[in-house]
Amino acid sequence: MIGLLRVELTRLRWRRAVLALLALGVVAPALVFAATVVSTEAKPFDEVVEQYGKEVLTQVEDCVAHPRRYGVDQGGSDGVQRACERVISGYYGEAELDLRAERESNSGPAAIALLTLVLLLVGTTFAGHDWNTGSISNQLLFEPRRHRVWLAKLLAVGLVATLLSTLVLLAHWTGLYAVSSLRNLDQPDLAVAAAYKQVVLGVMVVCAAGLLGFGLTMLLRSTVATLGVLFATGFGGVILVAAGVASAERVMPWGNFVAWVVGGYDYYVYDDCFSADCVPVRHIERSDSAVYFAVILAVVLVGSLASFRRRDLP
Amino acid sequence: MTEAIVETRGLRKEYTGRRGTRVAVADLDLRVPEGEVHGFLGPNGSGKTTTIRMLLGLASATGGEMALFGRPVPAALPEVIGRVGAVVESPKFSPNFSGRQNLLLLARSVGVADQRVDQSIESVGLQGRERDRYKTYSLGMKQRLAIAATLLKDPRLLILDEPTNGLDPAGIREVREVIRGLGRDGVTVLLSSHILAEVQQVCTSATILGNGRTLASGPVADLVGATTTHRVVAPDLAAARTALTAAGLTVLREESGGLVVGTEQPGEVTRALGEAGVWLTELTPLHADLESVFLSLTERDRMGGER
Image (cartoon, rainbow over all chains, first blue to last red; front, side, top):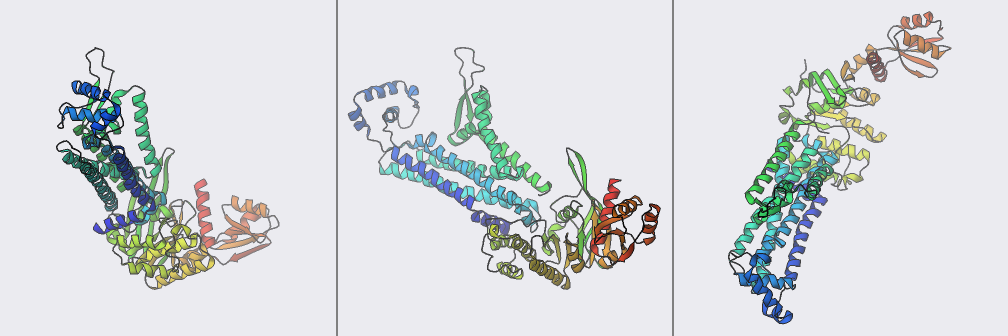
């Protein structure tokens, strides 16, 4: 089995399309990192006040009085005052590097999303090539135990996805932490630990995406068919939600992705809201999204293996 | 009796689709004894490739039994595959890898040393081009690479499906020599081919398929001897053809101003033509070849199928 895994890793390494995608998986998050570093080169709050006048202080006072209006969490460990100063500075294009904000809504989820898409394509391209060229038949003339061939390919995709996402996400967060330290910025307690927790969550979802792309392509036996299904799911979901079926958001990938990466996702369903005090917000917990992704992955992988073992090869 | 290296009993393959069930292989019995170079003949769609694919585990059988080296397949395929080299239909490799890279991946998947790859490349005359991308190869070179892949495992059974497709005359001769040489070394070869002269030259025995069934099987010499053809010349060939066909005789082809009729009994020809009022000007027994046998059997089978 180790020998087969080595062969599949070599096959992966020799595939130029895969290498190009892996390079994209490094370059795209690197650009996100660079953009984050550049865009958070903010002035100290005193200088913002000096430049934009007392209106800034008035807004900060209002923010401290009504933090939720400004999207500031009252329970924040670094204090409402400081959080409000950051938010209001951001209104003037002077946002400081905030590791918590990066983790919850900015570069952290963005880097993971990019890696997820790239590894989804890696898994799809890697498996699709064998089917497009028909070389899968040739491989089985040397190793007829189909489950071993399938498993070796799956492990190769999983290993590459895990390795790449670990390196890229660790570099991203270590880099942001280094920049934050160099700029002598105060960060919320446990911000670094939370960031590295997100690395683990990110690696898991990126790896799952690679396996999903591989499994789906082995099932459908075509890169184009897999991409078609994925696009149909993505765009079909958008159209469905736009058409008013808001509750469909529960089973759409993006909401579950955000829920997994940042710990929760809110969406709005007005269908049942007829009274004034009705709150139309629905929430997806991380555990909900874990079940969502686990079920999809299990169904696709089991179907993929069963199909590969039973069906005739072209 | 020599041990059968390839054996099928009642082998059957059905494809079920929207238009119903199509039988690709119908209760096929095939036996290839050890050390033979066995021709596997049949018109397009007769079930040759499907049979080969079932033997190699690429397609599942609907019914019947198969064995390689006396071991039931596909269950025991992992045990015996190391002794089997195969080319099925057109060669299938990754187009962006070099020929050598393609072979290395296959070799390493079964623990064959890289050195063996270079030996295989040399044995099919691809040295010098082995580091070029596969997609730049001519069809003949692709066939050679496929044959090189079969040699990686030092096989005791070679299953070759149209191995000379796309090769130039020199390439065909080389492959023929390779097959003959392997036969001399005791390697059993199952050779599916459309080039009947090639099969007659290379093979010691053959099986002829039609509509997924065995039409004839045995040593090539016996197959050729079992069927005789006659050349018939008459002033009105069209009328002669009509009369012979109406009498149930098989007109294999028209050549050099006469008809070649597949029959062992010249009396049947004279009677059929006499009754139709067509007078013979020439009736000559022809030396049978595998092509005549093949055409005679498959034509009869086709007509039987049409009836």
